[in-house]
Length: 435
Image (cartoon, rainbow, N blue to C red; front, side):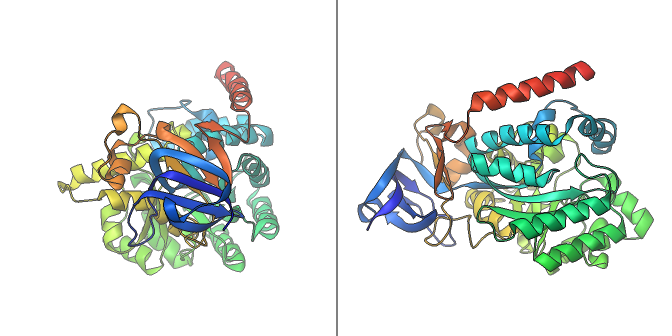
């Protein structure tokens, strides 16, 4: 049998339920689809071969909450609480900086950073969505892409009504796209009116599209919504009819037992952002309790303005250790669970589990190779433990998205990294002069 591409000479970690690592395994790809996974001796005959160098072959990581273009604000406003960070620094900076062209430049830089860190799919939440899709298509990063809505002018939309119209255009144009999922994204319960939240939910339902929202991120948000609505942020959205299995709720730090019951009841997907929440002192989401209730959970980096990197692997590793320390239970967040949240768990939160998240025939070919030949990576007794505790983003050697080799031997194949970096430096130099 002939294949377009075979990835071989490594341990395949399928991440499918009940699957086990395949020593000296291989993954065969045809037409962007995985068509065979098994021992290398049984998977032969391809036009192109990737040698994993004895490393790990695994599904690409899924970053379920980020703001790609905000890499241009990396380090711009550190060491502030969320409300001051947003209202006094980030939102004013975005109004002055984020044109369609600069969003494209930031998105390109973020896409490169993401892919080289093993992330093959992101859930972005920003502005100028159609331009973002153009950039990501050229570079080769899979994404859920909404046009964001806030009840004041954004870099792309002067009013919420314009944002709603742009969202409809996006959904009509890109629904069914093989690489991109269009979505709607009301910013949060505290920055979008009840009327506009309902309109967003109706639009998402009409197109069966994801609805992305920041939810219960800070104590301030919880207290504000409780005082104004008499409900927690989660209960408020449930009361409005916003929550569903298409909802991707970022953060969910300040949630009660009743809130967890609602998240489970409506099958909401939670994108936990451990590093961003720690850096902004927002708190720690109760992920173990969510998992115990069967809530869909995944990891996100948030934007690089509040995290400073898009290294999802690092963030997941930190979270794994954090929950062990908080609970006093070393069995909390086992290595395999963490690895699954990085991959198949992220796909489930985004409603993409039938397409990506595990290495199985019939799924799209989003595959990452991790080197294991550096001193910090030797030996590897358990691939899951290696991913959870020892691997680094710099170990990524090859990345395939939808069957397309986008990173080869640690270098991008689809775009000139130097040109993107130079453009980003030129843009951010102007920010420095204006401060």
